[in-house]
Image 1 (tube, one colour):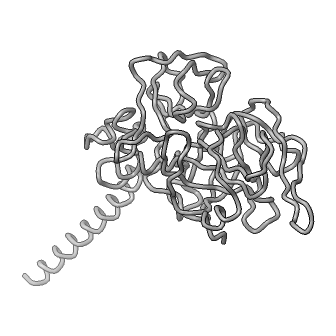
Image 2 (cartoon, helix red, strand yellow):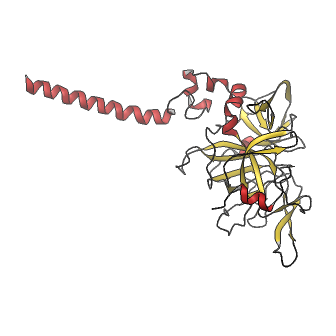
Length: 325
């Protein structure tokens, strides 16, 4: 298992370059332009008009990177205007700015609500990345003997929505980008045939800022649904890396949304924090601990066994009393 960002920082200098479209290691890098077989929320990842990515949360609320900004949103070929009075910036506990913001659009695109992750993805956990932006171009290598070559790719600016896979490579760390400081989770770009490589290994590039990182709702259940766990906002570059390139070993940093979840819900879905019985309805997409109890599905699992057990105990007590009389 990779030892994490300590190793990473020893080899690379981190430049807060805006994240872009996904660079894929698989095939010719032009694939994955339709929803994956196990769709985590493909339709909810869209883009600002002529710009980077956004994630539609539901109820006309849009989540994106602060450096992307509010603007006209394009979803399924339709355009939606931002509401100037409904723009909110997410902050850290000390009041400093993060690279994360919410804004509301003027109409409902008819997409489902996304569930925000209640916990940070674990190291080595599989995740899916979805974003708009540049694609993989011609290969490039850097270095000279006796140093080993470092391989990577140029970018093609085609602003295409793609999905890819990766694994979480370290615990959350704060990343400074411009005037923002954001708690982030990292994924690293590996070859697909390496131990930490994944079948659709991906790295963010220009245009992917504001795109989504999805993780399983139940970390121990590979069949559980997907939740929105991160929002891509910056990537790492090497000291001598040419512009508009991605190299193996580079990192994509995504906002740890579990850390900022309450702030986001307070604006975009306050019912999830209200303790209301309505919040327990699945369509509100509040998550499993929305009102301090199990999800409706789990609650059903607990209720029926408990009811059956109570009935069995009652019948047993009746039998005992009858024998005693």
